[in-house]
Amino acid sequence: MEQIERIRKRQLQFALGVGIPYFAFVIGIFLLVYLASAWVTGISILGFPLHYWLVAVAIYPITWGLFIWYVGKANRIEDEIADTVEGE
Image (cartoon, rainbow, N blue to C red; front, side):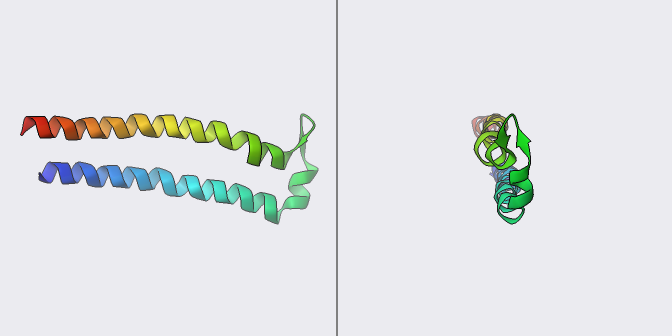
C-alpha cells in the first residue's frame, strides 16, 4: 500500500508540474496580447497579425502535443499502480 501512495504522489507531482506551467503559459500569451497590444498587432505573419497566431492558431498544436505526451506518461504511471496491485 505504501508503494501505491508513492506512485500516486508522483502522479500528482507530474500533473501539477505539467498543468501549472501550461496554464501560466496560456495566461501569459493572453496577457502579452492584452498588455503589448500595439506591438503584437504591428507584427504580421503571412498576412495575419501576431495575436491571431498566438491566441487562435499556435495554442492548439501546443495543447494537443502536451496532451498526448501527458496522457502517455500518466498511463505508464497508472500501469505501475496496476502492476503493484497485482503483485500483492
